[in-house]
Image (tube, rainbow, N blue to C red):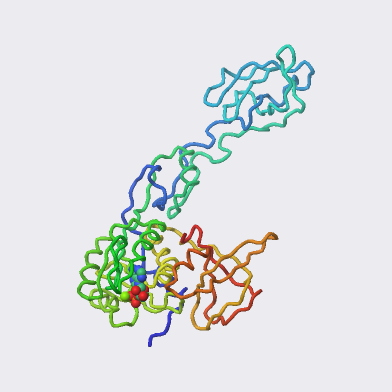
Length: 408
Ligand code: AMP
Ligand code: MG
C-alpha cells in the first residue's frame, strides 16, 4: 500500500509542476475582470488629474485677509463638477464650488457650505478659517502619473479595474483563462432532466465542478461523461485534451470499476495518488496526453473539498496568478464534541456563527459522510482538523475555513 501523501506536500508538488499558460493577450478593461495581469501596469494619468473640491462649499485662498473681516467675501464665480473655472480666484473673493469641481487658480482650501452664512448683500462669511489644503483633493493625491499600479500576476478584481480606469488605462495585457474540460465517470450516472432508470443516480458533480471551475477563473469548454469502461474513458479523455486541463470525477478509487489510474498509466503519467485527507483520500494528479488531469473522488463532498484545496489553486496558477490565494481561516470554539480518528487531515462540514461578544463558535454537522451534500449547503464552513488530531471536546479551539467567497 502506498504511503498517504500530506495535503501540503501534494499542493506544493502540484503547483510546482504547473506554469501560467503562455498565451497572453491584450483586453479592454471592461472584459478583463477575473484575469491575471501578464505585465506590470503603470498609471497613464494622475488621480485625481487636477485639484478638486472634496465638499460642496466655497473655494478660498487660505491666506486671504478678507477671511478675517466681518463684511465677508464676494462670490466671484460658481464651479460645478465637469466645468472649468472662469479664471483665477480674485483676491478678496471666494468661488461657490461643488464636490469634484476643479479649484480655481489661487484657491488652496474649501470651506464646507455648513460653515457659511450668506449676508444680506450676497457676500458670504465663514464660522472658521481654513488651513491650507482643507477639503481639497490634490492632483495625484491617490495615484501619481507613471506610478506602478499592479504587478504581473495580480488579479483584476473590481477595485483594481476601477483604479486602472481612473488612471486612464483602457487596455491591459492579461494571461488567458485556463480552458477546462469536466469529465464525470460512472455507469450509474444520469443527467438531470432525464427519468432515473433503476440503480441510477443523478450526476451532481458535473454542474458542481463546472461552477467551481468558473468561480476559480477558468472557462469550461466541455462537460462530458464516460462510462466505467476503460476504452470509453480513454475516448472521452482524448476529446477533453482540447482543453488546457481536465477535471475528472469518480473512478480513482480501488474498485473494479475504477479505471482512471489505469488509463492515465497507459496514456500519461500519475504524479501522485492518495492523500492523508478526509474527505478526498483517493485524489489523483497526473497528465493525460500532456494535459494536467485532476482525478477527483466521485463522492460529491470529496469532489468539492479536493477541488477547493487542490484544483482551485492549480487553475489560478495556470491563469497566471503571481500568488495562489490561501483560503481565509479563523480560530473558532466548538459548541459540541467532534469525533476524529488520527491519521488523515479532516475537513469536516460545519456551521459557524459570530456571538454577540465577537467570538466565533462552530458546530460540526452530525452527518460527515462524503455523500451528504446537504451538510455542505446547510453549513457555511469547513473545520480543518490536523492529521494526528483525535476526538475533540466542546470548548476546544479549531480552525475554520468559511466557504463564502471560496467555494460558495
Ligand atoms: P467513485 O469515486 O467512482 O467510486 O464514486 C464514489 C461514489 O460517488 C459512488 O457512490 C458514486 O455513485 C458517487 N458518484 C460518482 N460520481 C458522481 C457524480 N458525478 N455525481 C454524483 N455522485 C457521484
Ligand atoms: Mg465510479
